[in-house]
Length: 281
Image 1 (cartoon, rainbow, N blue to C red):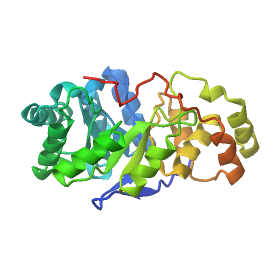
Image 2: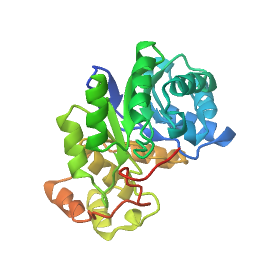
Image 3: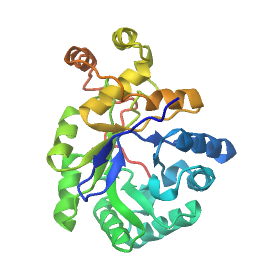
């Protein structure tokens, strides 16, 4: 199979990310190492990890065992809500580096705003401090609503490079996507293929896929790309990893995009994890 050429997305600090990445949730232990290594060797140069995934050690091992130089990779981890106090946050980031055995992270994110706790502002300050210390190259957030973003930007003068949100055809988040874009924040999509719903069996998407000679996941991932979002699919098999990566040799028409737009549901979150009230530590 010829090497897939993956476009780059430029961030607001001048650095770049690949236009598609690889999710690592529930990839743990030796099997997780092998799956992540295969993904890297297949062509995924953006890997999305987190402290709460409890696989930073496996992620680091996969990086060391892969055929790709570290400098070519973009490695992400995320700060859990239980470590949002400023000094706790810095210690947690250091521990992430020790667990992965990396010298730096390309991207480190706040995992959830947890607004009821009221600590995300100082957690953001800690990420900015970690960036200034050279521990991370870029700082971003996950699941932040405009009011959360406005607060940390006003407090620190630093705009996140990324806001990673739940985004899929059942819950396309057009308003949040537009807000992010207007403020120079790249959007990443978690659960891009609709974890725990029926998206992969949707008849309207299947019709588009059949016409194009592509799979349903490829159509959905291409939809993300054309929306301007960086999808982070997870796949265990090498065949599915290659398939998910192969979305840059075709395009969806305006009619295709309109058909998929009809699937949107204001209540389309798969687990009702609304950042306005949902909290995770």
